[in-house]
Length: 125
Length: 431
Image 1 (cartoon, rainbow over the protein chains, first blue to last red):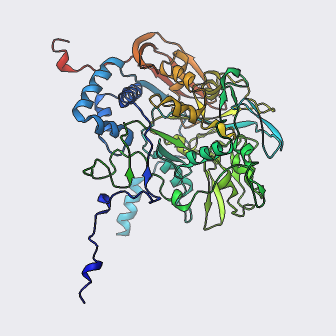
Image 2: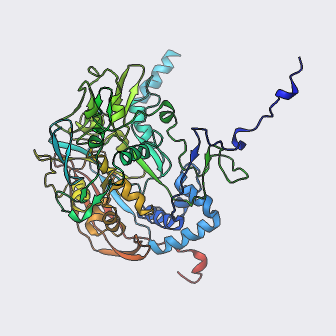
Image 3: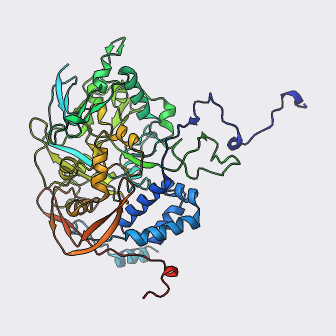
């Protein structure tokens, strides 16, 4: 049977639907003013204190999984961000540390005899 | 209602039970300045404790991005709003009354969740702690509405994903890692009508006795941090157990000599934002003077790390180094009036503070004491102060040593000479 023309509602992709104010699952955010330049400077400084150089930091900023860093990447763009990072790292320096753990290895760790296991498999075959 | 002393508020407050304090207290310091939101801690906890049926919505450890993220959604803004309604315009601090020992942040003049609850009588009398029961939807989506840098295809209007409508929002946010704070005056414990929740006298970890719990969810309602959760399959509530077998030194691989080890979420942190420990308490609940304990040093001596929403009144034992780029009013609401001092200290750490900060995630065993072996000066660094101005920090080739509860050295971290990466194109003739 032919569907009624009057009842037809064209499908709209969910991502392109307009936001509905009464939808309880929608976020209506309040702007809290902030300074992305300060955030970038301080993040770069923090990561530099952890021993991260330009390549490591750029990789982090590029990755969409790390939303804070990637938000800045989206805000500035690759080239502008790269220029900023180079300039900042030249000033703040990279601090590395050398860590030596002195916990003795557990006595429970045992070496598995792989040759015996292989021999067992061969016998089984 | 009995009166107990809350040093974070700088005053006595009412609490349903008489004060009893543990010998040691589970405590931790998180540094959101360094958190990249990788959720490794979240998964370490999930895969250890909450992978079973009925625990699908349990995230005892979660990392939310502020200001918009929250698990459950809007947990903090909802409770702050309830407190404001209970005591309009009076949720304020008096910072002129600061005393280093008893009132390091001044005096809180507003109402705690226990005091505000007395104003909200229900059918069975007033609540023990002001709170609310989050809806299933609020628990269900731990990351929904978080600040999203790339939530999907960019639309023509600049929105991502279609689930959020944001105003012109300049980029600033930070990752807030959260676990149970194992509070000194827990809201969950105060709220339980069955007295099924208790605080262990040996380490202050707050646990729910599953044999007594009847699943009334009063703890879910009364915990201001929303870290008690209801499990429908067992009809009981559950919460973070502080990885107590590790705290007891029962893991033979990590603690071959039986010394306490850090929890799973702490030990898994790849960003080295976490330092966990046990702090010695006096019988009257005050912190014992233990100047070489790294937590005592960071929290009580230097006051670099601050409690999360101290105004709730539970005296939480989780502390945070405030993220430096976040608007100051927002931070003061979240961490109290000690924010300015903490950021000032952290921005340009002196020799000892810089050394202690290297102990974050240096070893899986809990560090009870540190020592510093001093080395020569190896460089100067430019650091950004809260005002945006820059300052020069001196760097020394110091080594910080960490010792476990048995006095055994477990780690040493040496600060090395800084290196500078200079762009080749601007230094064509340099060597």
